[in-house]
Length: 454
Ligand code: ADP
Ligand code: G6P
Image 1 (tube, rainbow, N blue to C red):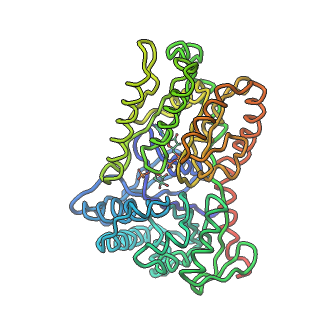
Image 2: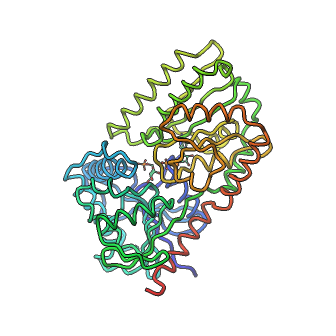
Image 3: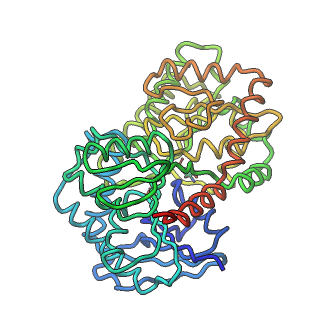
């Protein structure tokens, strides 16, 4: 029997329609491998139980824990999403550093190690996810856990300049040194990790994927995350009749699907769309932009600001260009079922994925998987998404330059069917070959071998 997989993440999906690349990918990965997934329930309570609550599922088990309001504020809203998230997305200016945030972050990671300990079995492999849980391996090791522990970072790793903005940068590398395997989305992240560690900690390159970090041996490598491509292709094929939707909008659809996060470049793409409409009156009533952006992390001021900016821009652009029959931008501030999303992607002539910084971006892969291969749409993709490293047949753009983005929109609108098919075939091959099963299998295979020849 293969060793049991124990996945630990902050977010544990217990409800419907999760948005966020981490839960979407892990749900798919665990459905294939089975195992136990431990995470935060999403609930706060004044005195959370000091044990995990188990939720049985068909293919794998889930176990959740509650947080106190104070832990939620300091560990999740504070350290994770007001310090680490902006830092890793090149927005150190949005960081809000408070001593209680770092204390709460350490406290929750220590408590999680306590909660996990009684449930670990000999032979388990532990796979820790994302920036909320950097200290977890150190906490588990301090409690005597010797099992292989891997970490996967879903978001970009910050460069040395940004890391230096942390209150105690060396501590981050100390935490990371307790893992057997560090996984990154893209080569740019692995390089940033090595360079940052060189400047702010001690790292030796031992050849291949082997390193010695702060005195401990570990492996570090790139594992670009994927989607469950075959399931998504099926989902999109089952979607309602395309012609019906097209006649409802009366125009070709351009779609954006993102959590309403400042890293996603949503206002920048609205401005680019405005430039397109200003410069190309012939495209009026021919293109309609649907932006689906569910709320996220609204406790953080920067997220409330981006909502206001987005609504304001959409209102202004619609006011400037709308006609009786045509609304240029439709902005849906909510989650949608995956089947509905798959159908919308399929009907969209342009998929707009323009983050200013992004670990991978699964929406880019979902859009490609959902296309009709005979008459596929065009993916416009930011160079700053991890996905750009492998999806170079998209129209790659700089999202900070609205003129370049507007030009790409026009190119996509006018692209011949032949060129669309050629680009799409190459993109689809990549999405299918490197799907979520490949991602988790290659990561877990490397974790299994991480201690060889140590
Ligand atoms: P992130 O992880 O930063 O949110 P990704 O693009 O990697 O970005 O992953 C986002 C995931 O969330 C995708 O699987 C996408 O389909 C899903 N998602 C985004 N917006 C919505 C929405 N409005 N309704 C349902 N799912 C959504
Ligand atoms: C990104 C992060 C995940 C996170 C998700 C949704 O994908 O990498 O760790 O779960 O966003 O954000 P939330 O704060 O709602 O969990």
